[in-house]
Image 1 (tube, rainbow, N blue to C red):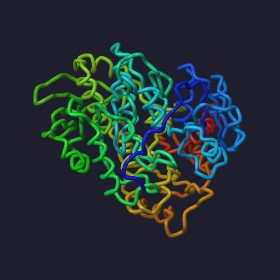
Image 2: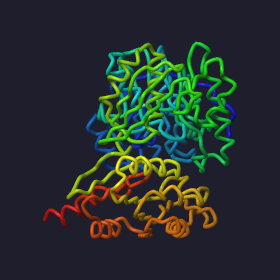
Image 3: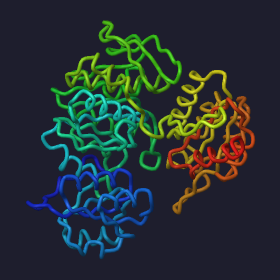
Image 4: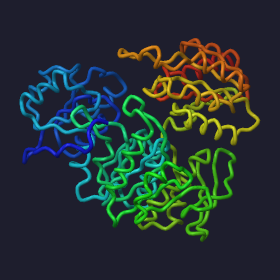
Length: 484
């Protein structure tokens, strides 16, 4: 981050009818475009990566897309421009926005201005689990009749969407610490004016933005300052960094987790038949049981964070537990893709070593006797860097078979000394026990795994992106082998 505070909010026209979005095909930007369209604005946008499925999804909603970043994109005279963080100051339509004196906003500024007015923002944050926790809270409040607005960083299982306008008096939003825009280099969640918030955990991430975990601690500490005394802050009491950055807000801070000292605590965790059950207590008084269709103790903590905010919003634990029984996880979070000849394929967004380890631990605890394959792609800005070189091998230790693909290369590729050494990681994993292979291309991985997998195997593809369609290609290849 290069700025100590968000920029001053710009003056906007008294009447806004036409809105142009630069970088419209990003997941969040596309969702914002659809939300604005539903609110009655005329919305168009530009993007150099205007490809299906997002381009098709937007066109189906009557939103025109201009290919590339040309200054002529603004010739339709929009009243304001919303600029995604994919945009650089030198892009032609960004330059034209400034030259023509068209007011411009970032995504977080637009969310706050158009959707948070007269509503309580409920902001779910943390290095891991914020998408799932946000989806949980949005579902609980909706299921119990509160009709919240929400925006989540993934497609929710209950809604089949990652946003909803809602008419209730609160808005549930995933609080991302990534930077805002080229003209406003602060974390997105500094813009969200949180009334209630969680901090699930805190680790080093976003190595393209932050130089150290201390930098991340700083922005979370400042985030805590934004919560008013009438609001609430729930922190994972089992996470030392989350506790440290919130220490100065003990006036509103309470804790959730599995440890004895937590205000809201889960005990007696049981993993069986694809579900997780836990007994929950508040201030040492038993509340009842959570029954979740998600795996792993980390998802129990996610559920506790959502439960805490929902109860602060006036719901009883019984209402929360009733809703949580019907919660369907966000896509790409332990998402079951296919069952072929006794072989199960899962897709998981895990790309940070902590997330990889937690996902494999959850799978192993649920399926202790099955052969577990872990197939990993280093594509995120952090996983491509050497920063976690020594942390990845132990994350894979619970797998039986590990396959590592070639790390993703971008046009602005990293210098050799900064890149992750995938061959060295593979050798380190072998020394820990799992049979490990380095197979560079997705289609080669598919052929290899489809040829060696056997009934009873459990295959988990781990990536922060689409992994070249690995999961569905593998399912097709297994069907060809076992179900010709």
